[in-house]
Image 1 (cartoon, rainbow, N blue to C red):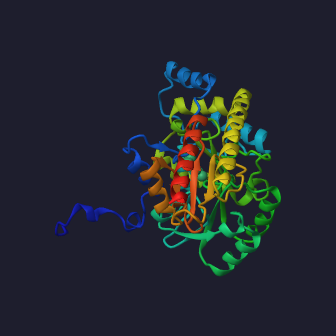
Image 2: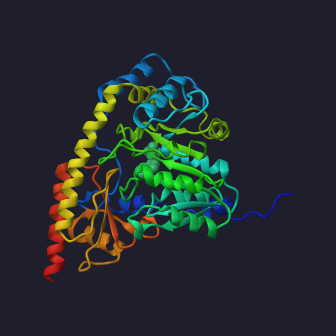
Image 3: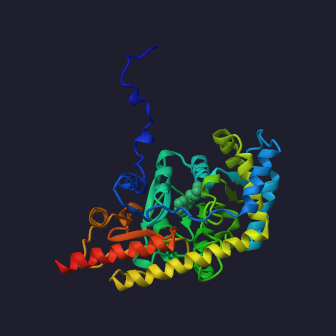
Length: 397
Ligand code: PLP
C-alpha cells in the first residue's frame, strides 16, 4: 500500500535522531573563520610520514595494485600487524584468523558495536572519554553508560567497575581507552590486571582502544589483552603512531570466533580496505626503521608536553603530567571563567586561541580544557603567550 507522502526528512531512523554532532568538530569548524585563529583543537599528528612508508604506497600504485583485496585486509598487512603487536606489546595473534584490517580505528569500533548491540544494550564508557564512542553506541541502538572517573585521577578502579556492573543490566561492552583521549592517562599492568579479574567473571566484551599505544611516555605500553585475551578486542592502527591519519588503516585483534563475525559485518560495510593504504601500513608495521621514526616523534611530543605542563601550571591551571597520547587536560583556575564552554568561547573572542571545552568529553569533563599538542613548538609557544595575555587581562580587571 502506498502511504500518504510526508516530509522526506521523516525517513531517518530513530537511532540516528539520538546522535549528537561531535562537539569538537562543531567548535573547531565554527572558529575556523575567526581571523588569526590559533587552533589546538584536533588530534592530528603534524609530522610528515617517512619516505619508506610513502614509497610502499607509490609502489602499490605503480604495480597496478588496483583491484579488490579481501575484507580482512591483505595477509601481508595482517602478518605485519601481528608482528608489530608481538614486538611492541608481547601479544600473540594469528594473522589468518585473529586480525582484521579496518578503515581506521573508527570503523573497527563501529563494526564491533554494530555487531554486538541490540536495542537498549548498554556500553560502559569511563569518562571523560572520546565523544565518538557514545554516538556510535547510540546509532547502533545502544545506550552509553557513562562512568565519571574524574575523581579517581581519571582511572577506572576495579571497585568502581564492580559496583557499576552490580547496579546495571544489559552491559554488553566496555570501551577502555589506553592511553586516553582526552586525559592522557595510561593504565599500569597492575591496574589492568585488577580490572581483568572483575571482567573475567562477566560476559562483558572489552573494546580496548589502544590507538595511542606508541605514544606512551613514562613507561612501556601494556595492553589489556595481556590479561584478558579471550574477552578483549584490541583496537590499534597507524593513524597516531605513524602520523598516517589520512591513510585510514586500523586493525582489530581478538579471538577468532569473534573476529569471524566482525569480519562478516565489516565486509558489508567496506568490502575491502584501500590497497595503497594497506601497502603503506604493511611497511609501517613491519619495517623496524618505522619503530625508530615513532620514537623520534614521541620524543618531540614529550618535549611539547613538558613545555605545556610547566607553562599551564605557572598560570594556575591544575594539570597532571599525562603519560600518553598528545593532549593536556587541565582544570581551569578558580579566578577565571569556570564554565568550560564559556571559557573556550571567551578565549577565542579575546585571544583567538581555540582549545576544546572539557564537558564535550562527557561527565567529569566540566571545568576542564583539552589542549592538543599535536602542533609545532612555535604554535604552542604562541598559544602560551596568548594564554598569558588572557589570564593577565582577566586577573587585572
Ligand atoms: N580512538 C581515539 C581515542 C581517538 O582519539 C581517535 C582520533 O582522534 C580515534 C580512535 C580515531 O582513529 P582513526 O583515525 O584510526 O580512525
